[in-house]
Length: 319
Ligand code: AHG
Ligand code: MN
Ligand code: MN
Image (tube, rainbow, N blue to C red):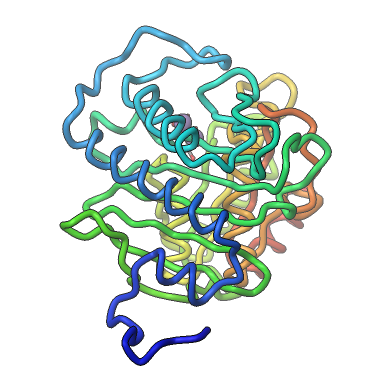
């Protein structure tokens, strides 16, 4: 970093300053992350001001789409189009890969609004993003991401990002004039978990080993922290520096045979962030970071968080 005496290190660095001075991100990647952050400001505002009723549409998975899902998707699309370095994007709200410019550099995968069914209850919700170099992510793995970030819309709006390769995971807060300012740098995840966050708990009826894992957490007197929004629940782990989050499939005859969450735009970005912070992710046999992308709407089981607890849970689930 070359720092002019006229440009001292700011007391509270902005996201742009942080990207430019503490990472090896190219200018293109820095601009892309900044434009994604801009879309998050609009989504944050929309959540506070938009009708939260159902739109009557369903997405490719047959789920009801809230107006805010569609609006968030539109806001992100507009910002990615304006950015100019995105060759294509894959959104949870769209059935296909959306091509923008074949000659451009990045593919962006995202869940525009995660936990959207919680909006009317005024729970925290979020947006999740993964960034890949070049087009066509089929056959790649989440380890190929060049950056990942999420935004948590709670009592405060927070943005957490990493550019990987040991550069760390960093947390920013949206201030009153619409700037993301550094709150905490180098978030870490300890090896032992005190909190547990068991998703798709309906699977315990068909997957006895999941039931045993839950009983072990209760017997250990761990503290339950589950909100129903993956962004909030995994942010809890990164914020407190420990914990475990699971979303496990219930097997062939269950509602979600392979778990409820999507490999590409939900689990992949979080695996990148949590492993960068010193935690671990698994689908039960391998790291989520090494699981091949075969389909854009592929689902995966996920066990993620504190290393020792993830390893122990994987053993319990496969016993
Ligand atoms: P989305 O709103 O994008 O469909 O995602 C909701 C997800 C995720 O955030 C959460 O972890 C999971 O649904 C909750 O599922 P269960 O309530 O079945 O545990
Ligand atoms: Mn989601
Ligand atoms: Mn969603």
